[in-house]
Structure formats: C-alpha cells, structure tokens
Length: 340
Image 1 (cartoon, one colour):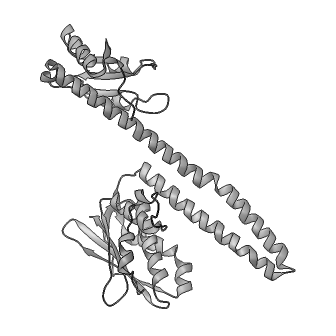
Image 2: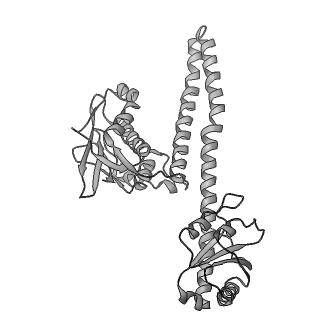
Image 3: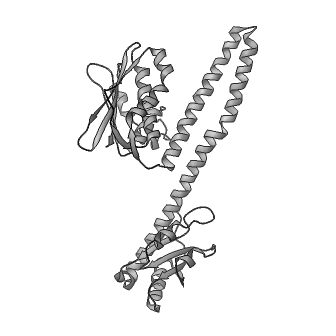
C-alpha cells in the first residue's frame, strides 16, 4: 500500500451552507496530510462529471442524500480502479472535532488504497486465468495434433514406435486438466456468483456422468441415498466438489467394490454430505496435509495435489466446512457441510 500523500484536494459535497464546514474540513485535511485544499462541489452529479485529475483527490460527503455515497464510491478512474476515497459525515459532533475528523479522513484514505489494491489484484488474477486457459491451449493443441499425425504415420509401419507418442497425449491432457483447475479457481475467487437454491440430486448426477470412464476402469458402482435435499450454494462449484471427492474415492477404492454417497442433517441449519470409499485409508502422518489451505500452495514443500484444497476453498466460500474420518473398519469418509 502506498504512503499517504503529502498534498490532497478535498472535494466537499455538503447539504449545509456556511464557511464553518469548509474551514473544519480544510484544517482536518492539513492535519491528516500536511497540505490540503478544499473545493466545494455543487452535488453528486457535478462530482461525477469532474475531469480526471493528476493529483490525489478525496470526496467528503456531509449529510448526503440517498444513493450519493454509493454513486461516488462506484466511480472508476481510467484504469478501472475506484476513483476516490469517499468519507460520509453524518454526525455533527465529527465536524466540530478537528482531531476526530482528521483521523476519519486518514482512515478513509487507507481504506480507499486497500480497495484499489484489491481491485488491481483481482484484475491480475483474472488476467492470469484467461491467459492460462486460452493462450496455452493453442500450443497444446498443436502438440496433440502433431502427435496424432506422427502416430498415424508410424502406425502403418512400426506400431512399437507409434506407441511412443502416447506419453505426449497423456502429458497434454494432464496440462489441460491442470489449466482447467487453475483457471476455474481464479474465476471462482474473483467473480463470486450469488448463492441460490440447488437441487443436489442434479449436481451429483452431472458429476457422476463425468466419471464414467474411471468407474468402468475400476468396475466400481456408486450407491446413492434414497433422495437428495435442496441446499443454498453455487451449482457449478458444488459439481466440482463432488467431482473431486468422488474421483478420489474411486481411485483409492478396491476394484469391483462400491463408493457410497450419503447426506444427513447437521444441526438445524446445515446438511452434511459425504463420500465413503473402500480404500486403505490415509496414514496418520499424512492426514494433516489433506486439506491444505489453497492460498498456501505457493509455499515451498507444500502438497502437490490440488483436488482437496480446491474442495475446501469452494465449500468455505459457500459458508460450509470440510472434514475427513477414517473408520477402524477401513476406508475413508470425506464430507462437507452446507447451509440449508
């Protein structure tokens, strides 16, 4: 965050007439920033039509009418960042206190700088997601197409050499899956959709359809409960949650067994959903790394897997929590809660 400016122009929008307000704001501004000039603006419409300035500006709204603060805070500069620090003064006692008004002005400026940096970082993350998801697919498509051509040409004369192209396909598919996960999470944390009523049966069915090849390879069946409840959440996120949990369960279960899905009430306002597998469980020494915080995966020696950290992050962003249990009878149970 940048240091407070040494000079500041305070744009004052006040419903009250008189020089006292201007004087108090000017003195508080100089106390906060060292040098400050106050300029009165007729109203919010005049404020929004102000030309862009090269010097720092801040907006002081005294007893604003409804919507004025929202309009001022929604204004963007040419970089599409929040244009002004906006402070609302609706307490007469604050105007009469130079020290209190100066602190409030300084705090509003700090909040504004934090909002600008947050908006900038969100934009950076969205740009990375777009570049990863779009710009890298073209060269990967070229690699895959070339490998297919080589395999076709060699397949007629030398099947053994043609088989050497298989790792190219596998590597390309692994990279595509990784890009999909990274770009999905970047979009999820930067553009959070509003929660809505979700029919969980439809979400589970959609996730299961995407796992048919894996199910057939392991000869595993999925056992469902008699019915599914409706919850509050984000449908696309919940499909990814189920997809990861079910895929892990299938991968670690014994062949020709079943993976059980279940749900149960957890108190009066939450529902617990889970996946029970028939695998060998997880050694106690590795259990602490299962739900590793997604935002810490950039640290050295962090786990390489993305599935469970993604599950944890998506569930937490919907107001829920994740957990895992390892029954003495064997297998693993991975579950998550969601508000009803």
